[in-house]
Length: 334
Image (cartoon, rainbow, N blue to C red; front, top):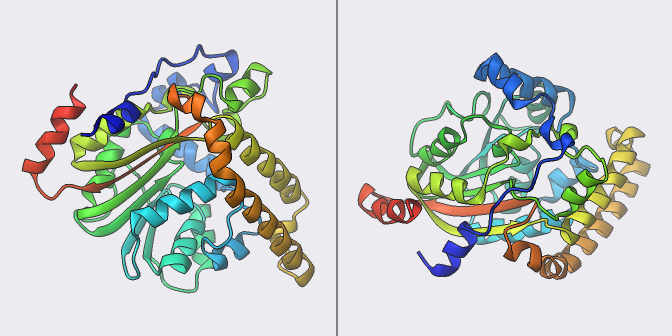
């Protein structure tokens, strides 16, 4: 593998000293493990049944595909989806699909034929209600996907891995259901968050973990995640850190406004006034995000160079044979 890819896979990754807020999550990992894996899964289902992922005017985003993005991270993801090469008619699986908003957006943007799986029945019910087709949706476990092997052209997994006990098995399942040469795009939260915007907030006493059901002990490392995917038979084509400081600051600033509007119940109103306001808001956030994310990411380079970020993206494709896989297995063992 190229040296540049190796440097991205193995940046300086000494985890930061954990604060008191970091050591406590929705429940401490030790308590979760005492309940057993089923207890952890039930806890996540309960959390996301009550708190589905938040998006501004989601019905407008669903229809717009990726022509409208609501924060810099989504502009970065748009570029990653374009580079992934999603084609019309591709069978796409969204692992941890939530309310199905990314299934709708990717179908609108690329014409992909989406399926989804999530742990939350409430989110899946909303996903089914928002889409007029009979899209396959399953309530299940990401460490034991209820799909045959070698089925999907594309698998995406966004903001999921950091919630999972048994991450190596999860990554193996993501790869298993891909057809040979099928593409995977993974985004997850980084263990190595020293000196990032969230690290600063935690130092100031803000609970950056409990609010999104993150236990810091479950946050994955870039190197561990890349090595697990390599062992599972994935060729790593892209590894990139994102959301270190300035990009994350803008993302979080937008989401503070979104959270305030959500408390007013404005996103549930699909009347003409709310829709007009939503269209203006999304046009503005789209313009801000697309024009700023590369510059903000450039400002984040000192953090990313040292392996510090709130999240990281890995994209790759499934190797066609065990013979090809051995080269990458040798690299991952170094």
